[in-house]
Length: 377
Image (cartoon, rainbow, N blue to C red; front, top):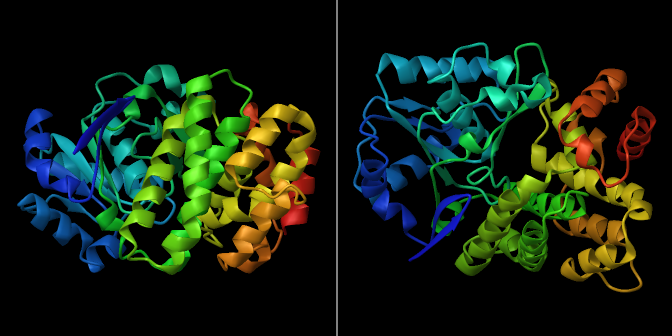
């Protein structure tokens, strides 16, 4: 079993969860809060993890993580943590559970309110190393949150904000592809497109970080080569492992920043109704944003991106990605997710304020976002 150290420790292999008891002991966690969602519990994944590790979760379980984690859910989980005198967290699930766990780990050792730690409120400097220890165990191959320094939380005032700090990176990521075998095709495709979008947007970010660029291109190659196989053949462990690695690599490159796809998907994802899946939003927005960004990207970098995405010479990159989305049977328009175009001004305002917008390779304006939103509608 290989151990990788890049920002944090990563245990990556089928059956990797078997060493969880030793991991907890190494981190000094004796009373962990288990953060997950009802879907994970109903699917038996939490029980499977506990069985592999030979552990008993006891009463310390929070399973009310919503599809888009909220400040209200964070405070509810924090109450369970404090009531049971927990001393660490194990998060199992998709990006929502992992992000919620990061917010709980933060508030377990930092005073409220949560809003003061949002990046757009100058909160990066307010987050200290005192964050409660967290082990992240993803059950989807998409967000890369298991190695990411950010948590996306919808505040009680309706804003979806990023809590960003190297101190929020989980102390250990346990990546076991076996835990993704039961994921249904639609979520496999949607979370996979999230991973692919991360690799593309971080590579196109104008910040200088050649190691992150190399990781992003490799993650993109893996994702593009395996997403359809993992979606159609859900028990193909090799394809599942490749997608989990692509998601992990997308998370490792977050240090470069993202771009306009995420600026807009974060804003749309802050809506309470309709509640739209982050990966599906990215799949819809990615072709439009790529078309917008191409004139601002140096030719050699664009060619490198095309090569990693296995884009044929006679096809534009945005059309290549749009065709992939269609083959995966994912929505191609926001209207298919129930969005009727209302609240456009507020969404654009949120997108302009989002931390991802500043690293778009082409400068974003309110009108740029309005055009992209209109074309994606």
